[in-house]
Image 1 (tube, one colour):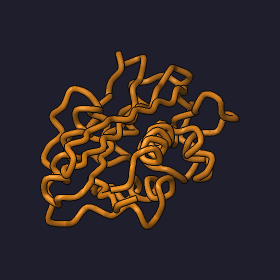
Image 2 (cartoon, rainbow, N blue to C red):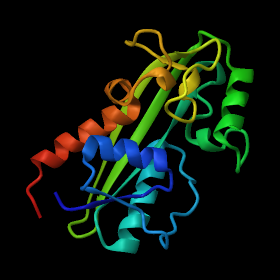
Image 3 (cartoon, one colour):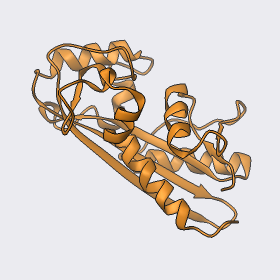
Length: 193
């Protein structure tokens, strides 16, 4: 597999993607590359915009993820605004605090991820989506993961939050894990370039 550039500045996402696609095959986004603001209405639109920007700037194959949490109690919000839920420069802690203020314990949540693949050499663009259903924890638990993981109890798990799971358990259940497995399966079927 030719190296793939991951269009993100989020070090947590880089670790997860490398864990699932391989340490050697995924390169960090060069510092000089600007991705621009996330203006899309959907996770897929935002992921494609970032992957296209990285591919155009580097000339190489790029992937980008856009993901977030959707709360039934908020009509699907924060959705694509998950990273900016409490404001444009909000920290993970501020976003989590606001979600806890607005969403009752036990209510339905979903993590959603879109991963876009862009190959400028042959013009191929694909989007792979993953989803993880769950519910709001009564209080934050666990020190692993990032973002909203301390309050997200995934369906199909053992009642622990995403932040309480080890990396392999999280990859098995997570939205990003599902999207990356779909991407990896598709890449395995593509002829080498």
